[in-house]
Image (tube, rainbow, N blue to C red; front, side, top):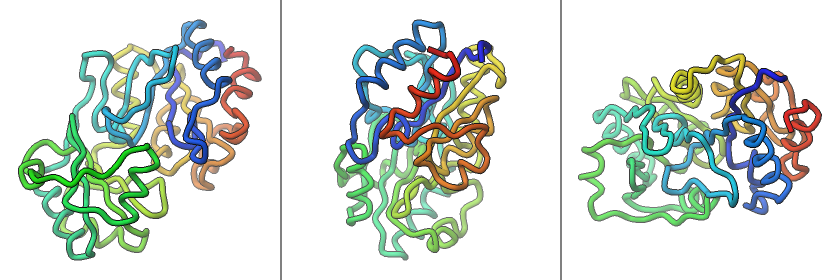
Length: 258
């Protein structure tokens, strides 16, 4: 795999163990050694830019946030893909009918019209708290890149009812990220590859959830974590060890990337 020039990493369940919520020293070493070997490092997450963790001693070359709807490198915005305003309002209406609060994610904040246990627990995965906004209606009329809400899979059709250009990127069984239908990590990966002048054959990606399906299909070498979903492992080129076992480290060592 001497042709690999860029690697995309999901965060939760991939770089960071969902149980410990920490990155291991060995994983930090892996990222540093990949960088030393001239491989570009990119984060690809459903998280907001303001809650992407910083890893000591590691500088990433690009960030795909909001499941690829807002991508940047340094101060350069590579791709900005907000949801249609009418769809934002329709999702809020549908969520209200389900008795569910929602959080709106913009380029610089995430604020909600309330909180329930599922939404609170969803935010807690990233070590964040739900902020209830007194300017929620104003935010809904602006640029919204993602809507977050607690729900179950059976609720998906009702959440999207009446929307025209919106889809669900789900990676947890109690909540979802709602994004533009023209978005997703796969689109974000392609935008970043174009930005750096690289091909899909030169790209690798690691992920664990169903919101990583498009990402793994967008690169030449897609790797699922052992702790990943059955759907993701079914389409992956390879499966590496569990995140708790430093799976990425062992895979990169085996493939002589480090």
